[in-house]
Structures are given as C-alpha cells and as structure tokens.
Length: 634
Image (cartoon, rainbow, N blue to C red; front, side, top):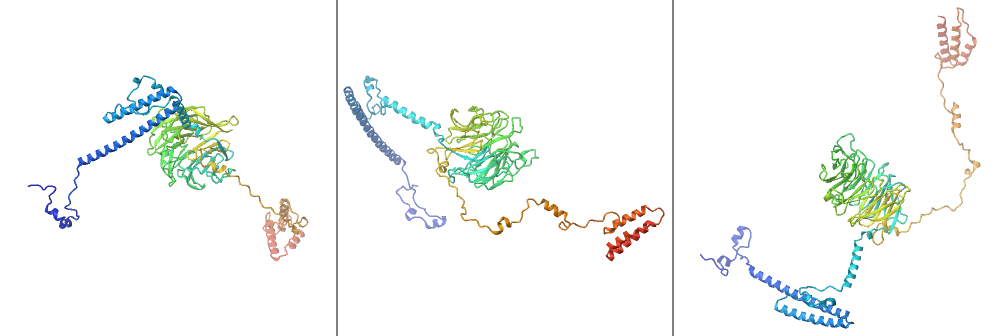
C-alpha cells in the first residue's frame, strides 16, 4: 500500500473536518495539516544574518579607528611643529603610517589580517630607535607621553584617596546640645526616619525630642517616667518606628508608643522556680533589649536571672522562647548585653565570664558559636554590635578593650584595641553607615579630663580620629545611617548631636535655623484697686494667730464642751451628790458603835430633805436610809 505524497489530498481532507467526529470528541480542528519546518534553511538564514551583522560591525569599527588615527596624527603635528627635527620625524612617521595603512589595506583585501599594525604611530623616543625593535603584533592605540601619564596618575590617586578616606565622611563640623537633666544619659533611641529622638537617664525620666518641632531653644516636648523609680537602661525604636522598647532596672520591660502611652508590659516570672525555662518571664533586674530587625512586634531582653528571652507584643503574658547561657562546665552565667544580627537569624549575647555566645534564633538549646575568653572574666561586656554586611561583630568590653570578630571564623579576634576606659555597664560601640569605621566612647573620672568619641578604621583597626565631647564620660553613641548624624549621651546629663550641613540630612539641621520663640508676657491691670469698706483695718475683726489657747478655754467650760455629768463615786446607789456624804456619815457611825445607841445628826437629814425636793428622790433616799439602819443595827 502506497502512502500519499505531500501534494496529494485524501478524500477526508478534501471534504474538510467531519462534523460528526467533532460532536463526538467535543472539539474541532480535525483534518488540518501540521506545519513543517526546514531546520537547515533556518540555520543557513541565521548564519547569513550573523555574518552580515559582523561585517557591518567590523566596518564601523575600522572607520572609527581610522578617524582616531587621523586625530592623533593631527595632535602630534601640532605638538612637535616648532622643532625642525621633530617635523622630519613627523613626516617620516606619516609616511610610515601611510605605508602601514596601505599595506594593511592590501593585506585586508587579501584576507591576511593577523599581522596588521593598528593604531597611531609611535612617539618620538621610540621612533629614534631602530625599526626592527618594533613588534608588529601591537594592537590598540599607544600610550600618551610619560609626563602626562604621571600627572594623570597623581590626580587619580588624589581622587581615590579622597574617596577612600573614611575620615572625611565624619559629620563633626557642627553640634547642638540637648539638656536632658543632671544625671547620666544612659539610653538613646532614634526612629528609622530620623524625626524623633528619645533619651533616658539615671533620673528615671524619658524625654522626647522632635527635630522638626524644636526651635533654637532645644527643649523636649514631652517628659515622663514609664518605670517609676527604676533607672532607664535601654531605649530603642522598632523597625517601623511606631513603638519604643523601654528597659529599666526592674524585671519587666515595657513597650510604649511614639507619644509615650503604654502598649504592653512583660509579665514577671516566678522566682521560686529553679528552671528559668519553666517560668513565664524574667525574675531579676534587666540589662538591655533589642528589636528584631525584620519581624514587627518581636523583641529580646536579657536579665540577671541568667536568661535571654524573646517576646511578642501581642502576647505579653508569656515569652516566645528562652535562651540559657552556660559556661563550658554547664553552669549558669549572667548575660550583660544582647543583640540581633542584621538579618535577624542570629542572637548574640556577652556574659559576665567574658564569653560571647551566638545562637540560631530558632534553636534555643546549644549556641552556634561560643568563644569562652573574649574578654576578661568578671567584667561586664557593655555592647555587641553586628556590621551592616552581617559578617563582623564588634564587642566593647569592661576590660577597657574593643575587639572585632569574624563570625565565619569565630576562633580568635580579628583586631583588638586597648586603652579605652569605661565605667558604665552600657557603653556603646557602633559601625558607620558605610561599614568602614567603628565608633566608641571613653569614660573619665570627674575633673580628670574629657570624654572622647574614638573612631577606628575597620580594615586596619587604626585609631584614625577622636572628638573631645565634654568634661564627663561618653556613655552612649549612635550613628544614624539615613541622617548621617552622630548622637552622643554623656555622664553629666547632656545629649549632643553632631552634624555637617553638607554631608547630613534633616535632623538637627531643621531646628537650628528656627529662631527661639519669645515668651508671652502676662497682661497686667493698669487700673486702680477698688477697696471695699470692710477691707480696711479698722473694720476687720482681730485675727487670732493661734487657736490652741481658745480651744483650751472652751474645753474647761462645761457648757461649750458639753461635759457630761460625772458618775457616782463610792458605795451606794444614789444618783445625787448628797448620798456620798450620807454614806460617809453612816460609816462613821458604824465604826464608832460600841454597844451604845447611835445618834443621827439633824443636819444630815435636813440636807437630804433640802436637796431631794422631788418626791421620787425623797422616797429613794428614805428607802436607802432605812436599809442602812437595818444593816447597821441588825
């Protein structure tokens, strides 16, 4: 059976698609022939197109090289025209170049383009040498004269030095001073946009500063005490700038909003539980805290209960996870500072035994990196900070050192700098926005010098720059990457902001240009006083300076003091004061009785009768009188 050729059409093809088959299968399109492609023809067409494009590109390149060659010749002719010998050389060069050009064209036409000489002629010094020393395989334009090259290299080196010198980028030409109080400024926080600054100190106060709303008086627009009588140790804005983490000397961290209103407070744990992982919160004094750089609402705190805890703002009743630093022997050790890495995947903490421990955020059991002698044991490492690239860690130790670590090879420090005294457990260190400098502060005794802000180059760790801040210790330092301004907290209650009008953005530049507002004077009355008649001294009643004597007199007066009637004293039942006398008389008669008859005095009876004018009182006295006689004689 023969198959029909491509030009033949079967009966079903001629009649078109079968409608019954289309109804049965549910779709149409039967009977159409598939398209055929000739791959060899397509490849040939593609090859021809590529060859044509390459030819056009080569022609354009040759034209451009020829134009450059002519410009170079014209420039050289102008340079060496005054000297005759130079003119001869130029003519020889032009002749040789023309011969080279003609030869190159002939070789190009013949198809041998490998040995052609491309570019302008050689300089004069090289033309004076024998021509056989010139290599024919030199491609591209020749270098300019040597003196021009040296000058250009010097200019490039100067520009590169200016670009590579990180000290030139330090914004320290201008400064403003913010008066926080009289005690140490122990906490600084600046929101991500750089609009508001918050300061906290040993005086329990937290103050808010708005750069856009301040004038030249530099006054805070709000002051509060969120933690009552606890010193403020750390303040930090969240990554969105709508919340502030407040860490104080208490065991409970707080989160407040931008206006100072409380958002949440962490729960306090049970201090009688041995395993700190089984309690819901910290049980001892806090040291510091930090927000997660990526996840909104998550933050971390470390405490004297030997734990590092992560929290969520939506769940203040229990921590999210617990990290327990341990020594190499498995004993508890207190973390003094903690921080997140730039990507938020690592948690680093420095401990009192001098070790630095780094955990994976999702694995709380064993640390990922552990260096046991990063700083001297028994000293409080005050700060650990990650670089912006996330590979380098800086630690500020209580042993007056600053060290740099590479977390990819966490077996020894990259660099170490000593002679940086510190007397505060929250002395800062931070990286510059371009990651080329590391900044920290130094402490001094009162009256023994000035605190400094010291800058180290990250690549060599050399001490490249210093700024004298004030005659007190430098505790906190913050270099904002968006504003390019440096905030410093000192030990005498000042917060300073350093900026450069050309290198910095907004921030302190917004408030220094505003004039100080004048205080509104109170309106005073210019009319005469109106004196009422009874306001004159002659009409005033004498005013007693003390009421004690008058109260004593009123107390002695039975009417004013409403003194009650005193009770009846002695034996007897009579409510009247005549009965005690009668009882006394009866007792005397009873005592003097020796078998003789007892005589009663008429005066007693008359006294009883005179006082008991009332009939009821009389019979009562008479009844009592007869009872006494009965008891006496019988």
